[in-house]
Length: 204
Image 1 (cartoon, one colour):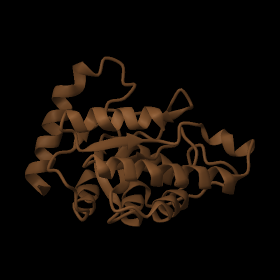
Image 2 (cartoon, helix red, strand yellow):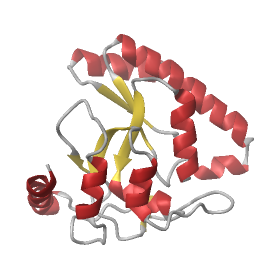
Image 3 (spheres, one colour):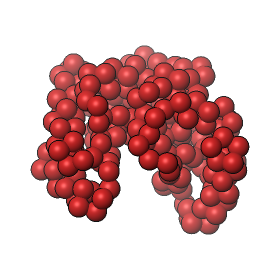
């Protein structure tokens, strides 16, 4: 909490309106402790974080992904609803959403959404307050978290995904290209920027 308070104050001082959070621990954590206890700790912590951020004029955005606990589609919806704060929402990373929808690193029985990223976007419509765009080739980076291949190196249909994501109401008018872990990301950034420009022209 001390680290969160410090980060939120830093954001506020710089005029940055949001603070990103995640579950920190890998999904294997749920093999070691009671799932309900773990969830209650996450929910109660993020309620407090949201109140701190609200006092500073910031919102909180949870980047769900296969590399951290509570990575099943139903987990994402349930935790969002249980936190229940107006300034708390989801950071929707298209690559992470695809892998979460396909059951990557789900503890126990995988929870599969056949429609992948698009279906995940439909399931969390109205819950999203920040967006990362990047392609997916259906693989993990180091068997840990989603690979983030440049646009065109994966198979996501952004002409379907973007109109769905546009149904969310965001407090800002920009989205982020995420090339996390991609080797020599700078070499493909120009191509990704051109892809984003084309999507923006087509879909706004």
